[in-house]
Image (cartoon, rainbow, N blue to C red; front, side):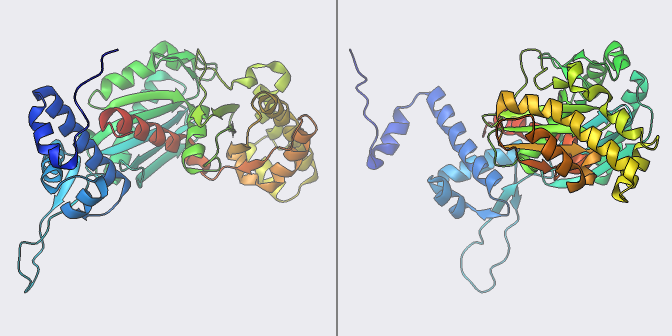
Length: 388
């Protein structure tokens, strides 16, 4: 078998090695160096000198200066004007940092009863958040208007422009197919008829627009920043006006062939489809029921036990299939904390083989939108910045 005659270059042969490269190889090497510099500045907040960057990336000063010049031109990096050094001789060092406020991400949780919209830097640091609830968005046109309202309001609060947005992820109460459209929804069928995803993509053509099921996004959010952070396997149960779940397997979101992974509530035996309504039966209003539970009302506590039994059916089925490290409970009922976890823990234990760790969501009502930010960040770092 023939082998290449070119040996790996020794340090003193680097210049000759580079001179022997053809144009495409030089271009590739230059791009690799630029990505290394960008990765360092993405991972290390704050301003850094050329010398600091060169040492961290194991690159020469001229190589780093060339990479920085291109990244500044591309808009990814900011150059800070050199500061006077007083009586010291020599030219003051320039400083460089990620242009994370000039390029922003947006996560939008859009439901039939309201929205939550979050704007962050490229790293995911929050800049603004707006929300609206108790409104009827079941109509496609109304929902489309709400998206535009949410975007305009959140970007204004973040002191950002629409052209600054690199990526937008929208969470929907629907199964989202591989093509990014609504494959199935029983919650907002008019959105599917209206083809809401296509309308949103058309309106925001200047940015990458991603759609995902809201429960799956909440799962991504909890795994990135919340109660499932650091785990390799987790189940996240989102309990709002409906009950839905998402799963993390081997550190990644499980979607399935049709985008329906985790939709255990489709089984009538889980009773998830009517669980929320039965909990509210204690008072006729969910808010009143939650308040009654907080005040130890006997009837409300009995309803809570039934609700925990209902949740346990689907949770147990997911746990028996996945054997996760943790199960996170999010959505509106998460405010009950241990009052919910205590009966739920007992109900799940009666149906599973091993003890299950139950946790309350750390992200609350922002879990879906923050999951959207995590998905945006993954797309931008891996595909746009190419540093993932």
